[in-house]
Amino acid sequence: MPQIRPITDLRNTNEISEICHARPEPVFITKNGYGDLVIMSIETYEAMTETAAIDTAISEAEAEFEQNGQLFDASNALAAIRRKHFG
Image (tube, rainbow, N blue to C red):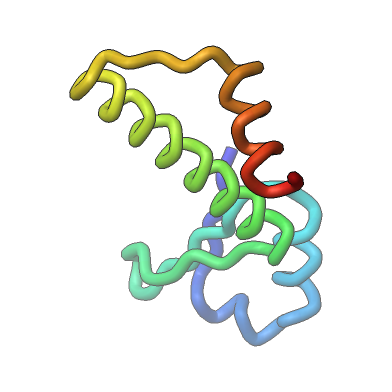
């Protein structure tokens, strides 16, 4: 369940930091009862951006396949990359 805290709780930075590091999810900060900010640990942020990058790469690969329908054999593709970059 997501953590939702009022903006006044940001005064206690140590507590907010502990909350952010205790769970791998963002903490939602409200102001006057409405969503205002999202904070998270660096580890959570990095994991989320890595997941987003992987999702983007998969989407791009699927779109490319839909355009030309061409598939490559993984062992042949890796061998070509090795030849190109290593020798």
